[in-house]
Image 1 (spheres, rainbow, N blue to C red):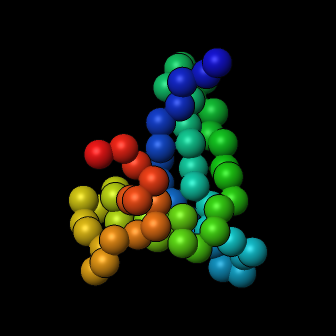
Image 2: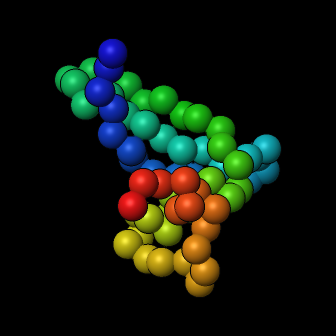
Image 3: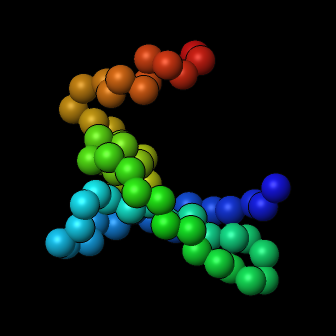
Length: 65
């Protein structure tokens, strides 16, 4: 298993979908792009900005409290 960290979310135009970028935490530092949906990109972006959505998002109801 390889430990990775979240670098960010990007929207490349013209592109099919947003991309989340993960980077290896080791010395190689390879980057893994993963195509995700718009809703997922929005949720990740809100979390990275330490912001809160105007109303609860669906995935919030799936998390243990």
